[in-house]
Amino acid sequence: MSSEKQYIDLYAQSREMLNAHSSAVLNGVRDSAFEDFKRQRFPSRKVERYKYTDMDKLFEPDYGVNVNRVEFPINPYSVFSCDVPNLSTSLYFVVNDTFYKKALPKVGLPEGVEVMSLKDAADVHPDFVAKYYGKIAKTSEDAVTALNTMLAEDGLFIHVPKNIKVERAIQVVNILRSNVDLMVNRRVLIVMDEGAEAKLLFCDDSADDRNFLGTQVIEAYVGENASLDLYCLEETHDKNTRVSNVYIDQQANSRLNHNVITLQNGITRNRLDLVFKGEGAECWCNGCVIADKSQHVDNNTLIDHQVGHCNSHELYKYVLDDQAVGAFAGRVLVRHNAQKTNSEERNQNLVMTKHTRMYTQPMLEIYADDVKCSHGSTVGQLNDAAKFYMQQRGIDEHEAKLLLEFAFIGEVIDQIKLEPLRDRLHQLVEKRFRGGLGTCNGCKICK
Image (cartoon, rainbow, N blue to C red; front, side, top):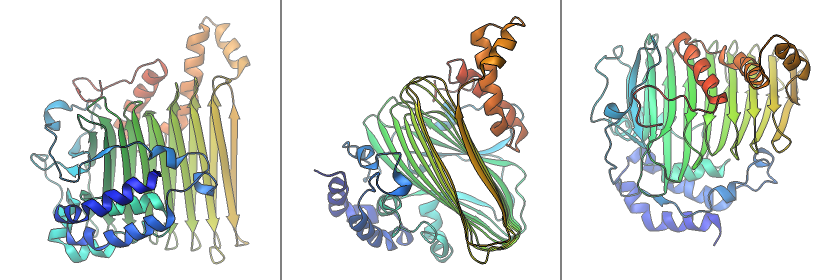
């Protein structure tokens, strides 16, 4: 049986149940997504954007899907304790693919700001959600997005109204929870109105030692003069497979800071599609990967300069050990009318053993003549001269190696604007290099 067939059969058998447990807005695009999935099937490695990860193999196992919305018992507020010093956040939880609303943060958000269940938002604001849902995450162009759209029943909705500045960071902990092997399909919709500002921290954790397959589709709209910081941190386990597609639409003079950090995982495939729709916009897209054992991390990005006078900055760094596999493919597209574009793309990688594999493919596609664009990549090992220099000054070889690794990856961590999070990540990265996950004190989830 092909990987696609089990999902085609699942949809045919569960369509009415999916619709019953979701909203009219999500249901309105479900059938067309199903038709797009049937037409495309999972992309093979011959497809340029999927050449480094075998998608068919990822979706081949027979995972359970919680179509009936059976509630897995958990009170995340009683088992999760974040010890990032001085990081005062508005803390929310998504359990598998369901927004947890039995308890919410006591500290309120500014008037008009909404953080809530996507299903509930679609019921309360159907016209508003329908205006944005599924518009930039096009099911006709990607089979994984189509699969997520046809199966997603709930997720997360964040809306920041015009000219509202959210001072307190919004933290969302995505918890994987199950007593059986489970597939999770999570959907996120973020709408930043004109002049709005917010900082979002998404943390992926696992509460159970089960095989998980998660698909996630994030649609983020950054309005004119708006500012969005989006941090995505993965600390799961080696039985977790994560396929995340992030779609971002930036309007004129908007600012985006997007950071994706993989500290512990099994197989991870991240896709970022960012489009500049208005002049004067700017983005910083950064990635940090630490992988060992047989972990696999594939980051694929597309930054589409559709208009002129926009700036994009991209930096991804990997440190790979043991038999880990890493991949980075970044494409910057500068269209005919996108004059005065400024773009910089860098991918730098350390491979620690002869068994690790790193695939890197930075790409520039330019159709305008008045631009300033650069790209480059490096793959190498630690500098023996630097290690020798440190050993000559009393630092043993193992410690010298750790210090060099930490200094290498620190450039990405230093890009994080949230100072408490930046300091905590420096600690987590150091602990990760020393062989530990570096869990928060008192947290029962990721121990």
